Image (cartoon, rainbow, N blue to C red; front, top):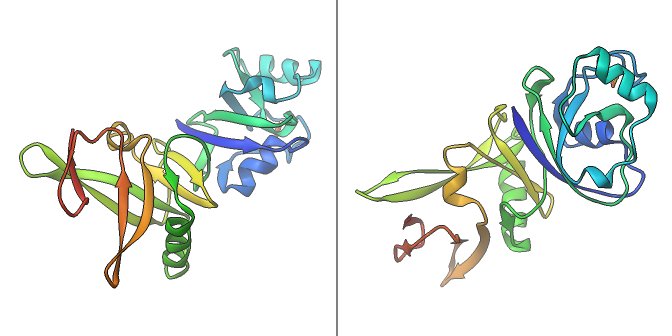
Length: 208
Ligand code: FES
């Protein structure tokens, strides 16, 4: 199961937007309302999407998809707003990107930095932000290019950069803003992490 956060503009087709964001959601019939493989669960922002037609509801019934918020992505046309979309595990071929929202934010300078880093790694589809234990009660950040995104990952989008976070790291970094700051002649990432009760001098490790 993967969760994708998106900011939609009016008139966008949800399947097109997810594919554009490299969410490899199955869509076997090509959007002709004949397969239900593009089903998703809209966890937040359902009101941002136009109402489902009778034909879409029939197809969801036939696919035994009765969960509240269930939609066929190929049939969902957006109004304007933020949505949180859950991709059922059997519908996701492979999540390779997306999203937007309050989870992880990049300053414009950090986003430019990551865009340059990703350009040096052909095949990278996102930046992976993770934490690993450091010391007896702390954590250290890891930021790496991600060649793929697992179905358990939550993916955020900020200033045009996708950031993938695994479910173990997520509680430790949710709400973090990354900035690129100058430290003399050097540049370094600064993590503004609301979950950090203490931070070391260099800012690269923290305690909770
Ligand atoms: S892609 Fe087949 S119903 Fe949406």
